[in-house]
Each structure stands twice: as structure tokens, then as C-alpha cells.
Image 1 (cartoon, rainbow, N blue to C red):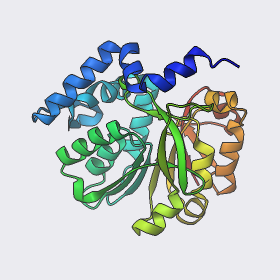
Image 2 (tube, rainbow, N blue to C red; image 1 turned 120 degrees about the vertical axis):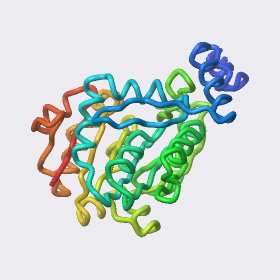
Image 3 (cartoon, rainbow, N blue to C red; image 1 turned 180 degrees about the vertical axis):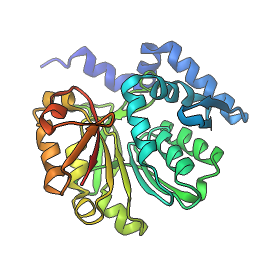
Length: 279
């Protein structure tokens, strides 16, 4: 059977080159920002509540989007309101680190963060942002995905057009990247830190992350900020309601979106729901 041209292209043309051709403006901007940062350039961004972030230039569009898009702004506001002195954040899907920076800023000098993200490009921006926040000694960052069991998984990079986020491929492909997988329960054991707050943004892999956090959720009862990608989960044949049922079984009976109580069914019906989950 002939091999489809798309599969041949994936094998012959590196994904980075294909993504550059697909998003030339964003790719060129990323290269400029990365080069500027290596030369010492930084950017400043006004955030809510009088907070000013000093950051890697490449982080500005993503951070500004989270500040200005209403649903993302509501999620960030809820997180800031829940920050507490000496908090311990597990930032799962940390990306460029906005929630990590918020924890360091609003959690005071005793705040600590354990962060996971599988993207090398995002990790470089994250590390610079933490350095600029003078938080390097208070943050442990792993270049890894989170899941139900430790091991490895295959992911695709979205490139500069998707701010270098990584997603599950949904099918066998030749252009995936193999990354380590860690569990939240394993991170607690290995780091000696017990989270008071957990932020999860993993593009449809929420159930696997929660399965790997069961002991921590039942024992420590951290506040969970969950970005539930119901649309992705349904398209993959899963159930967003089952994800929230897993949380309920661990003792999480209070769900809210933008500060307003919401039922599991209503939250699961949304394409993307940004939920604050408490026991």
C-alpha cells in the first residue's frame, strides 16, 4: 500500500521546519525574542492587582493574553485570591510560568514551587522568568509531562504558533518527541514538598494526572485549579464528567468557575472549563 504523502513529509521534513513554514511571522518573532533574551533583553508587563512582571520577551504575548482574555483573567484572579503566605504550588503544565510567578509574588519569601512542562522551548522561557523574579532557589522545574504512572510518552510540539505547547498526537506519527512522565504522588515523595495548591493545564490529559495524584489529593487536600478540556476529552472517547467524579471521590465537593459555584455536569459540558476545586 502506498505511503500517504503527509506521512512521507513527516518523516523527511523536520517538524520544526514545517511549523516555521506554517507560522512564519510567529516563528520569526520567537527567534527575535530568543536572540534578544540571550543578549540580556527583558520585558515588563502590568498585570492585575498592581503586579508588574519582569519577563523574557517571548512571554509577553502569552501573559498579556492570560491577562486580557476574560475567562483566563477570571482564572488568574481566582488563583491570586487563593494564594497564601508560604504556599507550595505544584504547577502542572507550567508553560512560561505565569502561575509560578504569581505564587512566588503573592506567597511571600517562603513560597515554593514544583513545576512540570515537557517543552524545551517553554522551559527556557520559564527558567529565565523565574531567574528574573529571583525565585530560582525556590523553584524545582522538571522537563516532563505528568501522568498516572512514571515512564515516558510521545508528544507533539505546536511550535511558535502555539507558544511551544505540547499535545498528545492522537495517532501514531513519525514526528513525535519522547518525554519523561512523572506523577504528582512521586513528586511529593521525591521532593519532600506537599502542595497546598495544584494547577493543572495539560490539554486533555487531566484524568491521567489526577490518577497519579490520588494519594496527595486524599491526604493533603490542596486547592486544585483544573483546566478541564472537555472538548478534547470527548473527541478522544473519554468522559469529562468522569474526571470530575475522580475529584469528588477524593473529597472535592466544591467546584467554582470565576468565583461562582458550578455543578460537575455543567462544567463538563463546556469545551474548556477553568475550575477551582476545593474539599
